[in-house]
Length: 293
Image 1 (cartoon, rainbow, N blue to C red):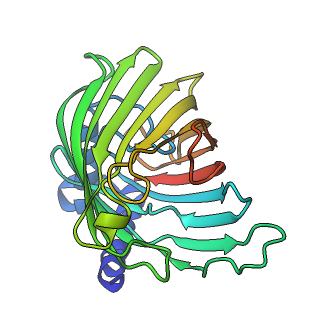
Image 2: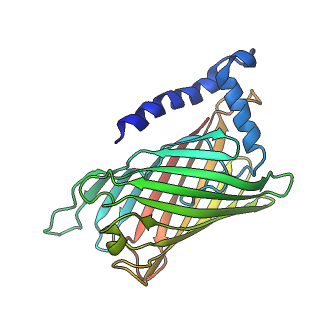
């Protein structure tokens, strides 16, 4: 299932890097320069906030991204999530974003003193996200954005590291800025296609809220609320919420002397902390590194 997306990602990643290093003296002959200029024009019509650590970005973004997650369960078992279902986002058309997310790799450690073996390590599910920016205004003209997006997940994961069935998660995203303060929120539900996921997991509803504040030139401290409400399935009627304090640093431009260069890096980290009685894990360290192209 991963060969085709990998084959597509290689030239797309190369295109992004080349767009930042190729000579731009003759943009009419340079496809990558024209593509970069068009992307900048599309993003200039929306606020310049960074994508939050956990909450899906409300605007359009073009990035190669790697996340690292370390979760601690209520029984003190541990799971390392390498990738966290993040990989590459591209803006192929006006007001449209397409994400290709390679399967994460999950490494499990049994709780201290447990006689039962830890779950088998392995790859998770592959997913694709499509986003359409409905309306927006940049920082100088109102600083707001409304988008709709849908995440499609394929059951490519190995033993119990992914879902048993495919799913689609339609969502609404809204963001508003107030000077250096940015508030972004998303809400949606996950719709599984077949049994047993429809009966064991149901159709959970998610709501995420991220509040960010710009400090100096590169620092964006943030606080997120990441909530899930379970409808149907084994956890029907339950809900869980995590509070995620964190900080993002960037964008650190690779060519600051070039006003037209898009290449840059953003780094960030935070800690998800369980804030509800019911929770599937106690806390989770979230680290992210992003190549913006």
